[in-house]
Length: 344
Image 1 (cartoon, helix red, strand yellow):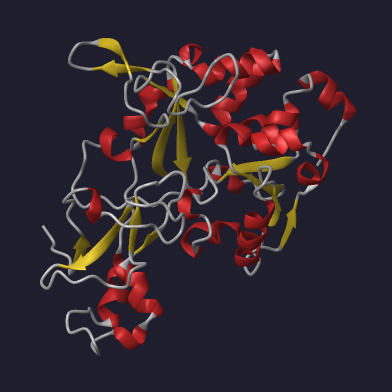
Image 2: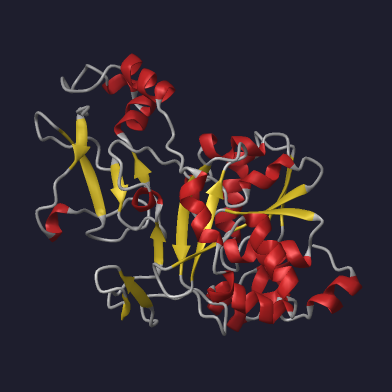
């Protein structure tokens, strides 16, 4: 097994985790240390535990690329720049074999999100079509849980994101909400007592926790980019992308999976948007953050437009609730909305 020069600091209690430089939360940031000397790199080199809500991860390789003057000067344990570049160039992205995922495409009627969509669209066929278009599956990780596959433009499955939804409201379950988790040993459903949001990245688990796996996430719906003629609309939530694709099918809808989800402002991720016309549709209260991200991606895209109608028209209560596009779309019956030919 290959040994790396820099490793994460071993957990030795709460104080061995630090304040994240991105989200500013205490005791969630794991720093890299030199394996031989035990010394830290810069205080911003490390990974935040809050992968969904923050997603910050600054690696030693990225640090030395940004700070070439540090290589072999004041730190005798640093790696040479050439070696770092070679490692990045030869890195192989782990993908999940399709046959391991196919079983998740069964039992759709037991899926909580599917049941919600069938109700709100008042059309079970429309709900089935959007599940098939995005290849969304069902998991026993939680009772009725939804599997959002991240499939890249070449058709490779990069990651599987499992989330639990309330079938009545369509809202994803958070830490305070009740969920039932499948217990393999007892072969029965048990109440999930973990005080965490109901989100689980299952890539490693479904592959049997392989050593040296290197997962690199991509946009949800990226496989649809093979359709070249449509303008690409990007939202935060996978559920929102699915609902919007039914109500407003003249756009091709992708989701980032979070404000910083899939590290979508990393060039390795957003390069698939090269020469495409883009529309960004941020959630309420996120417009400024998305404007910054748009400036990063603008050098690659053919054009970018930020949709600000929600921000301009939302009430104070709606802003407090942090609504997104789907929350507005489902207020209309699908047939009435389509007949009105409403567009963004």
